Length: 568
Ligand code: GLU
Image 1: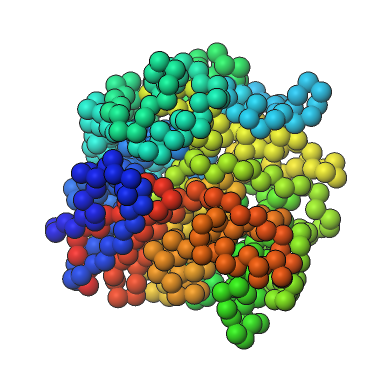
Image 2: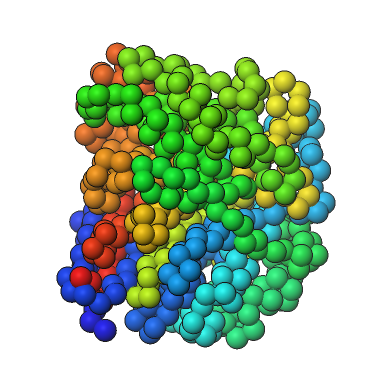
């Protein structure tokens, strides 16, 4: 198999230009090309190593996630949770895998309330055991590997073990995250690992993680059970309990990854599939795109400003429903079918007016909004990667430990998540009803992670994409799917374009981008605007009808794209 790697990254790891590396790979003959787009060059290479060894997209995903646990520890890892979509070339089916964290059995409804009964401050709730959910990523990968893996499980951890033992270079982004994080609590051994002598690691330093190498060796040799029902589970539980959490060995042993039917909708001639609840990502991205499709059909002369306005208005409507109705459907009733039905979306789209913003949108099934927005500001953590293998299978996976460095608890070389802070702190909505995203034992917190796989009319993958970014994820992803599938842009141009976000409030425009030129026009249409930096981390692969594949890594983070094999 021929191999084409763009660009040759290792020699330039320390060059500042490396931060801006943006690659597009293009196939050039008639065999099946494969591709990996991930947030760190070493993770991309680990995925490629598996593909070149004959591995599937799932095999590559496991190797990528293991390496990311080591080299992008602020964003994701085996101490966190993930959502993954898989496209099976043989059946043309898209499957959704839910590896979201669960709340311990002992949690009560006042988990995130102060003694006075008011919601805790967000940053007060993050550090320590209170925020840690049962990690789901490893069980999910094990389940997917059982169904779609070809390489031996053990093989998939070798790149991460190698790198953990020999060391890797601290990237500028990791160093920057540590610098920002410095004022916050960090417990041992996290503090000693990331802040030797009380100072954050700096870019270019070599970092080894022998504890993580030992953990991966155990997992490689004994499977995920050692993590959920063995010595690693014991260490996780001891750490969480020592820091005020309620996680038990039973919670760990009881964890199940869940295979769910994806949510899919036909939009602009494509079947676009996303994660079902407990991620709001799939439903809300699909609502936004459907509303945009319906509203834009009414406009004769579409220009960039009108397109942006319609996208923001569709986004307001999507977020109004998201914040009001969505939660874990294994615990609460959510009118999923209604919210994604044609009549409902047609009615909602009629609220969009090309000459004037609607301002704050109300949810569609009752009025007024009783939930209040739960948008958070921080968008520096989490990771997304996209893979297509040489058999034509694909993976779109978003993975997270929530805040950068999660709960600031390190166990056996990896960080534990603070994903329980994705529950709504106040169990009651503004009108006194119980909110669907309140904390309950065993429940999964509502997520915004939005891995997407869009299929073309031949049921071949057309676009594989996703992003980190907190609740902004939904907007980052919806904008790019719309740009590629409805506006005809290539995935690189789409990712490179400035971010435009509306979470049913102010319209946020990415600072320092051409999107700023839209500000006067958006304001004239009635948008309240805000200019802000936005750290999306979009990693996407598109496949054209002739079989050519192209990928792009978001220049706002440190990722790369590598293609293997040649295409048509
Ligand atoms: N915890 C967030 C979610 O599941 C992701 C965090 C982030 O991307 O910053 O939606």
